[in-house]
Image 1 (tube, helix red, strand yellow):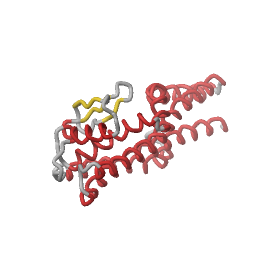
Image 2 (spheres, one colour):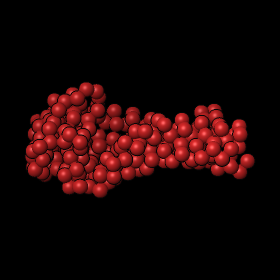
Image 3 (spheres, one colour):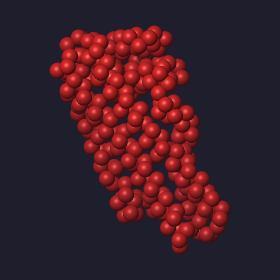
Image 4 (cartoon, one colour):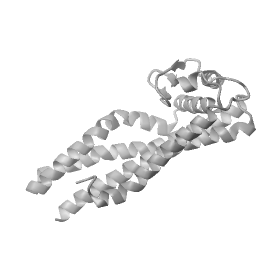
Length: 236
């Protein structure tokens, strides 16, 4: 019904292609600038610590974590977790990613609205991202077989659950764009990189931002496809 449906491919294929391109671009940019040392020689962990301290975030811990590009800020425990290639490297890619994640900690301190909204949505999205499609398909199939009000109601519930995932992806965009903007500015202000090195940091962070754009487009396109199926079934 889905992967073999040409309408699904028509709606989702552009987003899938963009997502694949974005992943290739971010890996390429990170690999390229992970070989270029920042003039300050600071590691990602050191750059993050300086940024956090400059902004009064002495309570935010910095810890290494496993995995490539698994870097993230946990607002619940006030912890910045950096992957090995970021935590211990003094490359432009490392300090760029570390500064970006530090930007999220600053957003948290300042009560940045989009971050607060995204954090509040996390429990719903964790449920809706996997349960929504299952509930929708179950309701849609019931609607097709029995044309019952119950099937329609279940399909609407599934659609609503998945809609939260799409909304989460959209809300994520300003959060990530703002963190990158802060990172680029702070890295120069505190002397981690020079103005001439901004090109490398821009390449890494802009490529990472593209992955979030692709994710949002993919989530919205999938939601539109589900809605197309549901409204089509109602007309039938």
